[in-house]
Amino acid sequence: MNLESIRASVLTIPFNVAFKHASAERSVSQTLWVEARTRDGVIGCGEGCPREYVTAESLESARGFVEARVDEWLKDVRDLDTLSDWVAGHRDDIDRSPAAWTAVELALLDLLGKTEGVSVEALLGLPELAGSFRYTAVLGDTSARQFELQLAHYVNTGFSDFKIKLSGDRTRDLAKVNALAALGITPQAVRADANNLWGDAGAAIGDLKALGFPFSAVEEPLRAGDYAGMRQIASAFDTKIILDESLLRQDQLALMGEAADCCIVNLRVSKMGGLLRSLELLRELRQRGLPIIVGAHVGETSMLTRAALTVANSARDILVAQEGAFGTHLLAHDVVDPPIMFGARGVLDVVSLPISIAAGFGLAYRAAEFEDSRRRQ
Image (cartoon, rainbow, N blue to C red; front, side, top):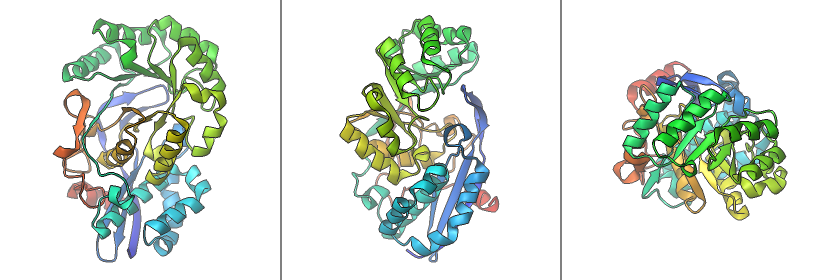
């Protein structure tokens, strides 16, 4: 592969409806879009979602990361081996800018697959995509009326797995669990995401007990990295703790101690610093017997949805749930046509999409959006 250029731009797509949780409220996407091109005119694309409250990245810092290293990548990356070597040799750089690197790496993997005429799965020696994937209904921190309407829509569509965002406002959160109970949804079918809401385990336990709804799992209830406190919460409710902001790098597994027994890892490709590092973490989690959720950032396009499918397809034996694949359910438009998004019952069947064995990630990019992204570089 003879690289000619790697270009980063900001991709901004309005949401059909604003999405809110304890750490942020968002009504447009916050996406770094990368285009890699060979001298023969073959193009690969990648996406990363920098989030200040997750990895301390901004769109500005992410673009700066790419612009500072373009010449190095153009010189050194020629195939999968040299790409893997760069990842292995620059762990600290990627740790500081995981979403930025994700966008670059996905573009290069897409390009490598296309130049070799194989899918990304074949390129990486993984099973080809097959079968169906079932997604979770994710409900943001909205008004009681909006929550009820969204929930009813999900139930009528056939969803059976739910995740709600907690606000810390007891009245507001009680209204949510009451709405769930009124529709016959059991706590075992619901995960709660607190987005690092509470300062200590005691406060979290008190507020959660007041809700009277023993969730199947609670995601990030405390400050990131407070594994001991999270274990206290898990013991108090005989529940699982989902690690998101508390697990950004593989080496953090060593810090979990006894808390590992009660944890599920939310593996988001952009947060982890790319597909190669996500797959590396997946292998380690499997060895440790830890289950995973393949998660997503709010506002991801079909590009990151497609990359997450590679992980989920390789993790079926330890996969608890899958999030994302909202496509134009949330975005005013997507970057690919047709978008990769869940349908009835939250199911996405890859047989219905031309992505399972197509070269690279197999995505057909919308020309207008693609050209607009290039102009914004």
